[in-house]
Length: 128
Image (cartoon, rainbow, N blue to C red; front, side):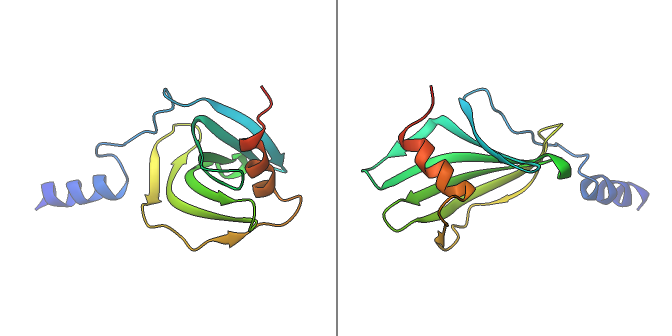
């Protein structure tokens, strides 16, 4: 019984087979920062479909929360929308995965001058 309790405790604390995020295949480029939040695009995971539609892997780092979010996002510049297709959440310092989802969210609008607009525009004209 004690062994079962120890296993449940270890799993609840995340001590069993902690999965870390692998950045080795990414070419992350800094795009923007707003207060304690940084925005990056993985240039190895950009798929431009036409002049308005593209899909990209975007990392958002909230340093004050020691958290990073890695999203696959579909952008539509014509409609000024973005749709998160999947996500991964990890601790920034250890890169240990803490959550995520493979369920696409509904498209969201972005405003002129917003961080998401900056990311969408960067995809089409990266600063090399």
